[in-house]
Image (cartoon, rainbow, N blue to C red; front, side):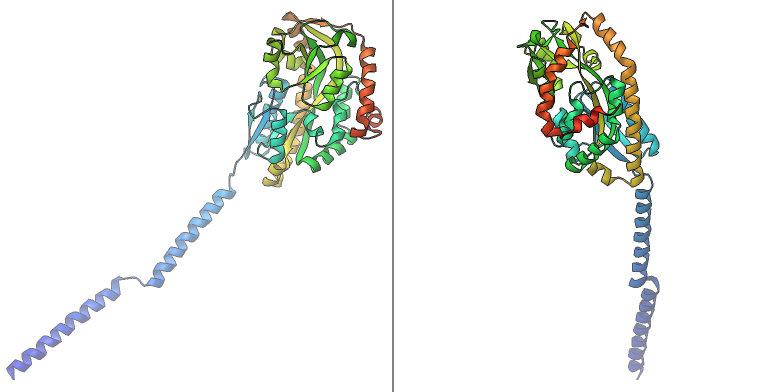
Length: 360
């Protein structure tokens, strides 16, 4: 009997110990539903923080490439444009500038902006006119009386409508047409006061059909070439001359490899700030508007710089030993261009030349 009581007592003790362990376990371990709730709240808080950071302070970095030097009015205008965009977007759009053909020549740049791999560029009308031919007329010889007249043409409703049509074809939007300067012929051999004196001279032109035709109309042999190759080609005698503005001549020190600048004034030229439509579509609407508004302001700034600087550039060129041939047979050069107008009318559109000439 005594033995039986000992066994019962032992069993009761064991049961009591087991109950104690079970009770302790259920009191210290949180339930699985409680863990899931805490994890869910943590994830939600992290996601909200990230979303707020994304909406507050996103910065868009854009690339602008051009072919001229940083101290050319185009280079200074590019800096002004970037400053305006930064200011108008409160620092949310930053434009990095690559001068001196760092991102490619004229064709490379326009193609890249069309594809959206480069966001912006400053170029003339030659490359876009390869895809939208009516713009050829903006590079035609002797269509304007002077720089101010040419700028009025660029800002006319007629030309603005042409830019809109170009954008539909190329995916590139023109946001800032600007005066680029009067283009003169330059040679290393002869003064060239009339077309007959230029016969056989190899003259560099941009790789644009109407520039090639203009040089042919002036009696010389055109050599299409990237701007970045011109200095060395003049130095080595591959070229006899080139045609360009006093600003491009001076800032690239072509006076080191040329003797004469000829007062042909055959083309009064323009440039333009272009932006990729692909780039614009990636930006909030208010930033798109800021870029377009800044383009117009920067273009006016560039035009004013060019008007102010032209006389100084001419002085610099002549002070470095270049002879400026002022007395030329301008009528002979204009007469030679008549055939060009006839040839190109079918490309830029019948009656367009007359409409351009109606702009006073």
